[in-house]
Length: 311
Image 1: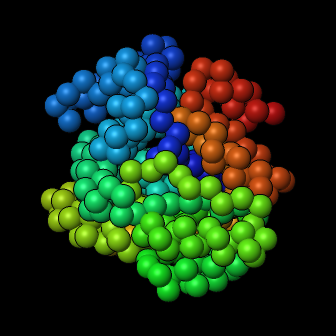
Image 2 (image 1 turned 30 degrees about the vertical axis):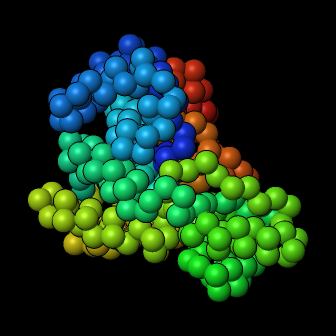
Image 3 (image 1 turned 180 degrees about the horizontal axis):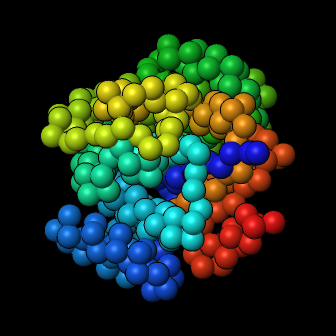
């Protein structure tokens, strides 16, 4: 019998009104928005349901709003009796995976990611860093391009999302150089991203240090289901590794494709993306089309997922 994995969305999938349908239909979903509001000391539900895209794009807002919406959807899915054998999340989504596993309390997670967003935003002055999506090169080709571009500044592979799609991060001149090199190597496209900071590169090591201090007062628990970490693309071995990995994750590459392939190798054949958007489902189709992939972000997707799981 195959296994099921819960996958949790990362930054970039936010949208005004996300989760409203679920919250209006399921008290369990509404409770997530209310708990987050109580924890943070402001009405995050109003920010999500009635706010604008510009407000949600501020990193300090983006991270707690996506985590809250994702936990709301998770609670509905669990209420329907759907359980996972393993969990993983893309960057920010790794915190939601830990909430799903019971290793970090939701209230602690939502406070942490709000500060994480602020630390990541403030660590690098605007205009110093950049990110770009490189389409059409292999992971090894991208690493070679980034290494060559590093001659003019910091540049590294930030997100290894799926075959042929990698995001690079670093200093502006080096990222621009990497885009040029990638095109010369045969990349179909090299697209600069509209981001507020160069995520997942060594420029954010200071943000990781600040986050580590914040985590000192947070208790972690044994995982009820295994969690795959972005840093290694493999399982978190024990609760003692959770904080160091979350600290490292801020400035290290996100090995998403490796994470998915690890789960598939261990018998996972059903993946459920939980949270706003379908970005992870899109990556999944490029990694392995033979697995089942669903998503839960509203009533329609919830019903489609439940129907698909019952077949």
